[in-house]
Amino acid sequence: MEIKIKHDWNVSPDEAKKIQLELSKLVKEVKLEKEPEIVAGVDVSYNIGSNLLYAGVVVITVKDLEIIEKVVVEKEVNFPYIPGLLSFRETPALYEAFSRLKTEPDVIFVDGQGIAHPRFFGIASHIGVLYDKPSVGVAKSILVGTYPYLPKKRWETAPLFFRGKQVGCLLCTQEGAEPVVVSVGYKITLDEAVELTKKLTRGFRIPEPTRLAHIIVNSARKKGRI
DNA sequence: GCGACAG
DNA sequence: ATCTTGTCGC
Ligand SMILES: [Mg+2]
Image 1 (cartoon, rainbow, N blue to C red):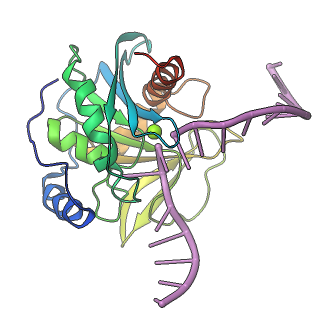
Image 2: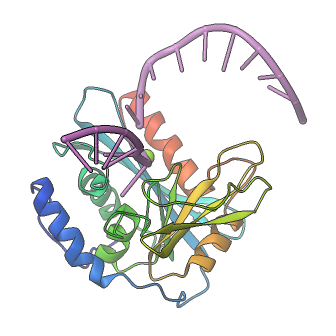
Image 3: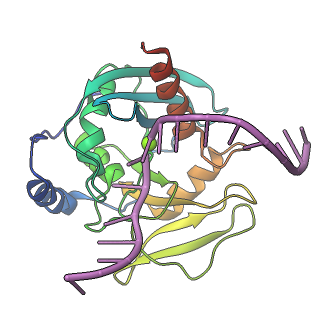
């Protein structure tokens, strides 16, 4: 996959925030241009105390959730984990994985927030904007925002609000489990993001794209090889 | 200033 | 994110 926008990653936290504010102007919440047939899921893993990240991308079909391509790479990082600045830690490694990806996905699913973010620009939005590719954030917990109730029944949703705007949805993907946080990353509507997430969810809490990406980066890490 | 805080 | 055993349910 080819990146469309490049910028420095070797920046300070303050500079990172400025970049987010600038790039957030490019985020679009619009309907998909084409019916998604192929989606990608991305995730990152690492050993505690190490600065070596294992970044992976899994590409699957929407129709039968069959894997058609997977890539895992190793990449050093120096940027720490700072709530609100996750993309500056994980995206450079994911960039290396995307560079080796042959398949062109219709939508990218990211383990983290889209616009449900302090500056409305989480890692899912960041990746979507840089690649000019529709993206969705599927997080395991909330970064910012409030909700009126917790969805308990499968496929039930609850709106997530931040600063007077609905920035995402809590989606119950599995009864008895905490809901996932779905938010628009880029060039998709929240309704489309939620519906697509439901299509991509099997019997697990985490939708397949991100769940499979999590599995491959962890197996690569535990084998100590790619 | 205090507390919260994706992965 | 990662560490880990026990326990519950299919
Ligand atoms: Mg992750």
